[in-house]
Image (cartoon, rainbow, N blue to C red; front, side, top):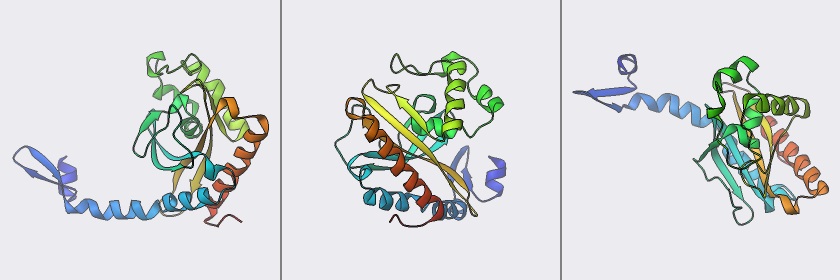
Length: 208
C-alpha cells in the first residue's frame, strides 16, 4: 500500500486507504484496450444463429471466469451469468478455454487439491486429473465444451479471443444452449459462428 500511495494510486487518511485520481490513467488505458466489449455485442447481433441465443465474453480471474459482457437473444437458461458474475472456470466452457492457455505447472498450482473444484452437477469436473484430460482435448480441438457441468440441461461452447496490441489480453467467447435441443447440426453451426465472431474480434473486421 505504501508503494501504491507513492505512485499516486491511493491516498491515506489515518489508517484508511482510498483510491486516488492516479488510477484514472491505467484504468483509462485498460478501458481503451477492451473496446472488444462493443465489438462483441455488434458481432453477436449480426450472427445468423447466435443472435437468438445467449453468449458471454469472459476474463480469467484466478479459478473463476468473470463475465464482462452478455448477449441475450433468448430468455435466460436455468444457469445464466450476468455481467460481473464469476463462475468456476473448471466447469464452464468460457473458463476452460482460458485455463487451457496456462501451463500444466500453473494449473497444478491453481488447483492444489480436489476442494478447489466446486461440484454443481454429477458431471462437473472434480479433480486435477479430470481437468487435465479436458484441457488436453481443448488444446487439440481449439474449443471448450461444458456438457451439463453447470446445469444438467445446459450446453456451453467456448473459444479463445486473443487481442494483440498495447493492451494484449485473452478473452473467452461462449454460448449457452439447451442440451435437449442442441442436435449435432446445431452444435456445428454454433461452433462455426463462434469461430467467425472470434476471427472478427481478433482482427477488428466486421462479419459479412
